[in-house]
Length: 431
Image (cartoon, rainbow, N blue to C red; front, side):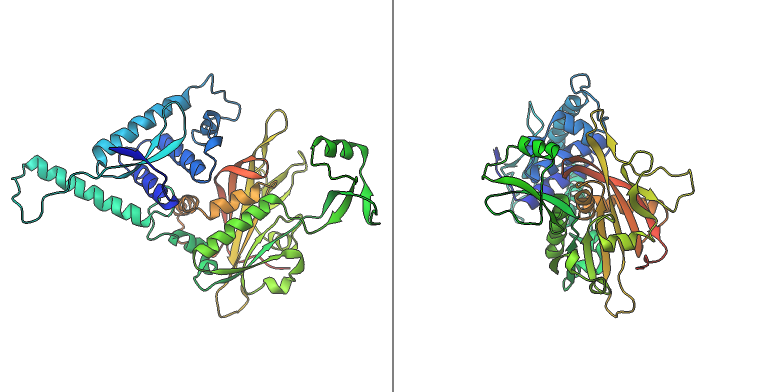
């Protein structure tokens, strides 16, 4: 008997982890990406945003200009995924109580519980003799449930088998995620011209709107509070994407038992950022700390002279051998693909207690939250570790940079994945 019911986030992750690690989906990479994508969207409260186009773009690798009406790949994959889920629960894991399904006629996942099977006879009751086939089936089933128990206990995110929850994050974040850590969490703010209506007295330090700006402001149809809109200067208005990245960093630190102090960068002197655990969110064009660090790193963010776009540029590559990580736009100019940059290194000059700095920067407002989502994700860091080991690097480097590729919806990322990394031989200099 089946009954659909809401599950806690951890229960959902465990249910999906079992499927993603199964033999049934072992050779179905696209279906695993399909399931992972829709379940991540559902868990983050974005189930209504799951579309056939989004699945094709973010899970099945379709180009941005593909047409669902001409390409039935998502619909075919949805049917295949439903069949795989049915096979998994009927043959490979029939005793699983908490399950995930894919609704017919749509692409939204749902979770349900099945009634437990009839209990096995008590140890002192009379047992029928088992055939050889029955023994083999029992051995296979015992092996499956032993593996399943490990997944349930160890999976910290979609489909990941880790030594314990969060361990892989601690490997990459270092002392920042120590249970007794004290982290300085800083957000940089670009210089801005903000708009505000004034009634009556108008301060001397505001500016009237130019006609084209006034027309744009009027087109926003904001609530009419009266007065005339003026522009004023500010250095205290962080980008929404940077604030989202800072929130994710704070959640990650707290989840590992650490503590943080949240401050804007413009009130923190350079000396306060040395010899301590620091997470700083900001790009080199408006963060003094990021600009000084990225001067001596292999990867940096700069403007491309040909296109005028911000790109992530690789200084370590020979001339003509490397293409910058450059954003992509559609025919109308709308950004489709952007990038984020993570720079992390030991942040100490001789202090006895280890400390680390993590700088999170991005192209457009969505680059930084995409980078932070990747770096706070067990799935993302597992992909990074696999890439390192493939290149012969068995341990997390002391100093390194990571490029994250992402699709976006205005200031927020829709999906993210590893685009590249660079290992640094030594920490960057703070000139």
